[in-house]
Image (tube, rainbow, N blue to C red; front, side, top):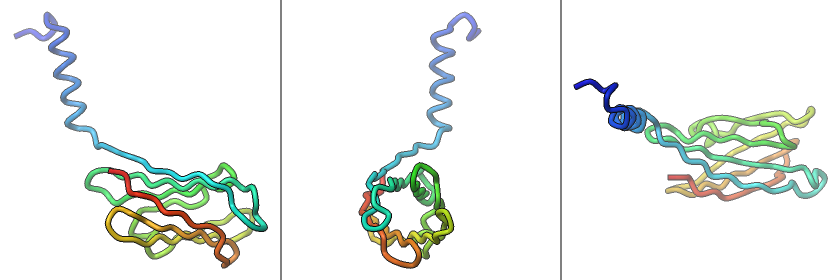
Length: 118
């Protein structure tokens, strides 16, 4: 059979191959602003889940990624920096819910709960 003569079938076979070979990814995010002395600084935390891989966490502060890492590391605590201010992100949880706490200069600054994407 010559697939050049059946362009629709060739496209379908190619698409099926891509679908089987691709890793499905889903992302959950929360957007907020920091309270207190850092008021109005936008913060965004996202968790990306891919089948068969640990979830990946990214924290943006004032528009830039400041902390990034996989779930085993974020459960132990990850560090970052924001213009000389040390940042810490630690997440805990069970099942598909994670509570993540952000510290700035060693003090609690922000927290959020996220549901792991499926």
